[in-house]
Image (spheres, rainbow, N blue to C red):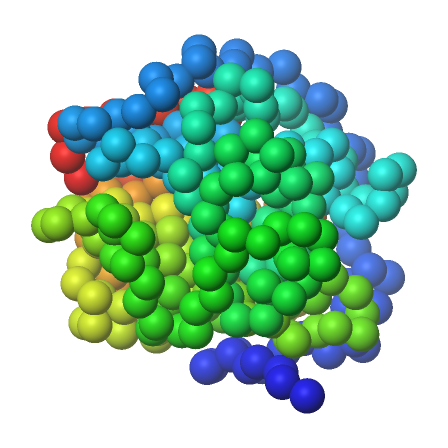
Length: 300
C-alpha cells in the first residue's frame, strides 16, 4: 500500500487531534461578511498578467493568454456533508457564472477545502480544464468522472504550453476519510513561462524545502503563500505556516513579491483572518488582496 510522508515534520497523531478538539477555545462563529464581488474578468489576458483572489486558496491567474484556477472551492461548506462542517464566511470574490473559460486547475491536495468535488464537476461540465495534481489523486477523480487529469511527483515537471509546471514539496498531509490518510501526495506548484515565474505553495507548514525550491528552480517573481489556520501552534505547526513563517518562507525563496492566501473564508482553527493579516501587513513585499480584489501588472 502506497503512503506518502513529509520530508521534515512528523504527522500529527489521532491522540493530538482529539486533544485539540477537546481543548479548543470556544468562540462565536464570525458573522457572514458581505463583500463586493469582482466585475466579470476579461476572457484572456494576453499581455502581462492578472491575479484575482476568489477565496481561501482559490485564485484566478490570467497569464500568457491562459486562465488558471488554484484549489477551486465554491461550495457553502468545506466538508463531505451538506449540513455539517466548516461553513463559508463570505461569498466567492468572483461568482461562478462570471468565471472566464478555465484552461488549467492546479490541485494541491485532497482536503475538502482544496479538492471540492462539486466545484470540480461544475468546472468540468462548463470548461473541461486540465487538472494538474499530485500522485494518487487521478484514480479518485476518475471515479467521479473527472478524466482530464495529470499526476506529478515532487520535482516532476509537466510542459503545458506556454507553461512548465513543476510539482514541489510541502509539509502537510492528505485524507478524505480517517482510513485513507497520506495515500495521495500533497504539494505546491512552480510555474515558468519564458523568463517569468510564479509559485503557489498550496497548504503547508514551514520547512527547509523553500530554500531548495529557490536553489533548484530559481526565485519566483510572485509567491502565493498560506498564512491562516495557524493556531494553536502546538497542533497546527506541522501542517500550517504561521504568518511569521510565511514571511520567512518568502525570504527563503528570495522572490520579488508575495500574496497571502488561505485565510478568512472558513473557520478552521483558533485564529482569525484579521489576526493573520495584521502579522504580515507591514511587509514591504506583500500584496494583500481581499476576495474579489485583483493585482495586475505588465509582467511578473
